[in-house]
Image (cartoon, rainbow, N blue to C red):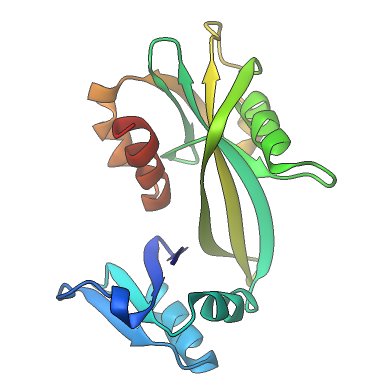
Length: 206
């Protein structure tokens, strides 16, 4: 199964046997039928409507995903889900929304190297240890009218850093914070859905 966020609406690529029943009234179920289907998904995703989730039903999720990706310029990025010694999560406030540190992978750089570098550059926390791979996220946006698909590899990290943050303000980062489990709801309510899902899966439920 693949999950792609189109304007913050999740699109699930599913075989019909895996379709949840019944679908909610504000969920949209679309059978995969080539180019027109993909254009319909983008139109729904970027329209103002009540649709919360889109289920793309296909015989082959891999084939449908390959077809979908052909519409976009793909950017590869990496980021960190960073926990400190007090079991607090590192979050940043970027361009008016709560986020996790991440950024584009540079040429000849592995996703792991890129994730650690981005956390270091964006927050000043550089003594990091990767403890495992989390997951990949996919989300779309437009830049200068070009459709972009950002593919981000996420890694679970540990840090013993207790110093001050050094924010990369040119990237729109206004604040960084270590946050406790009992105070994370504020972040979830003001974060992108893909980021909220990562926090729930790898911080709240870990």
